[in-house]
Image 1: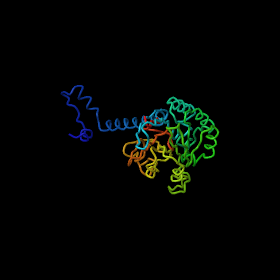
Image 2 (image 1 turned 45 degrees about the vertical axis):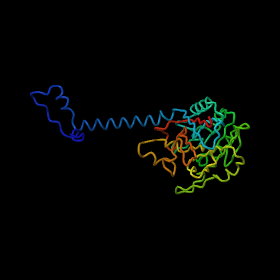
Image 3 (image 1 turned 90 degrees about the vertical axis):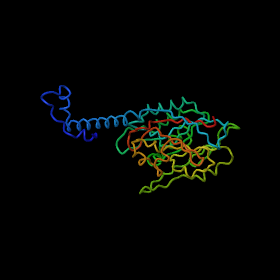
Length: 316
């Protein structure tokens, strides 16, 4: 007998001559009760999942560690990098205490370099609690690393708060890179840090954008054979990144943010779907790491991809 046949076949009344307690229990299991119970369990599961996604997972914080071995990064040139992406400071899930926790955790990793991959403020289509730019920036000012703290901007910075974000970062001495490259490190340990302009900076309508990214111009500023670390907000640029770059670091996708089975790749903000949605990607020897980020966008919820800080070790 199939499960469907079992559930939807009426159960006969127990015989008056017998059946006992088991028969009386079975007599109460009707189609309506089974369906009502199933619907109740489904509703409970859905509501519990929604509560977790909206109120619990966004408040978490994990450190995700990577130790890639790019072919064009010298084996003995050790570098540790803390990556903070998509802070989206603002309520309901990235208020000032959570921003402070992110900074404390990042500093506890004692990395050589800290990079910030854009999207510093939250934006939703409903009223929410704003964290003023000077306040979240004052927390980021506490970030400390021997090779400095460097930032790029993301699409939400350009769309909603460009002047505020630029001013806030400048006010706390965090340089913003836009198609720039800088040589860092001690003699014998040098590397290039390059930061690309945002690829979605100016919406043109109908899903089209004009970016401020200039990958060839950025690469032209690299004037020695030292290895290159490239910062980008959106990972979709990766197929165009030359092999000269040892490692590309990206954010933007939030790892899908709400990873429901089957359908989540269709909601990743990338023309490549799940290809660059999250994690360590190797294509034709080129390497990319995409952070799941920290805050939320559009919907203040996360499921299956908790807020994370990356700790990346090269040449270790």
